[in-house]
Length: 448
Image (cartoon, rainbow, N blue to C red; front, side, top):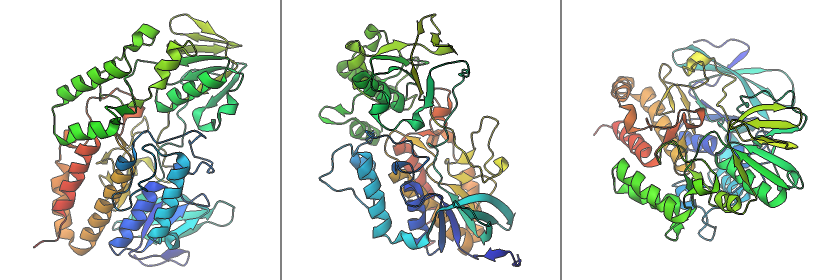
């Protein structure tokens, strides 16, 4: 397609959107496959969600990993051996900064630049419209492919109950940054995920009164089992390829022996089997409920005046409500049909990464796994880079690979039995998912 005066053609270059962990992995692996890369990052530094100075970061002062160090680090860039099993968020940011420096990625990143629109222009190419976050004119450049790595934990999911008539303060967990915000308050935390449980535990140490509202019961996993990080024990069971039912039984027994039966504290029993929801890694919640510092309550049905009413008819009068309702993926710069986004906002992507109708459009990092994200983002990026290289060098073989991949059964790479909520849209077992990526990479190996 010919150039136009107001469009700069970058020819075979690839556009990457976002310089968090997933975006950095994409830049690095695309460059290793010989591509020129332009990465656009709206903030002024790398780190994405792990840089809590960024406006969209959900990180708060006490945030630590819930996946252990060996299952979180990039496979080609290990974390320091003297770091703790569960590093602090400041260490994660330092790690990403060192990763970018080690691989010399800074030359490919345009900081303070946001992507306004990504538009297909035929033959697999894309016009990418950008502008400075400080203002100024928009710029359009044409790319051979686009890799989206803008994260999926920054756009808050709204509370389903109207809060306009409530006189107290209501804030989403994304606005929570420090335990001082809870000190001396009567706090209601809504949401049973990892963030909601962490904030409820911090409130138990700082607030005068704490209620914790959850829609259902959960399996609360300890961070350590048999003296080892729990996710490492789970990874060992997955490597042994034990049947799911056996792993569920072992998980159930382990939780009963460590955390115990939480229903005796007034917490609801899980309404699903282990591994059918994203793991809640928190053994302190039951501790503070058992000490009377947290009162478990069911779903909220009304907020009006100074009162909150719960599904069982109970009422409370908090002066601060923290809604840990999670996040929804947002791709403001893409027309919904490009990712086949349904009416609820869920995109339909092969391996949660490859656009089904646009072979030069991919998303990296859009998964929820039972281990850390960085290894998955790395191998996703490798697969995307090799796919684009194969498509450019051997288009007939690329078509063959695409046809074979289109028949890959969903059960081989995603979890089919999960709690029906947006929190579990992208739920995968990291072991099964990485095996699927490994198989795809084998299909793309150079012909002998």
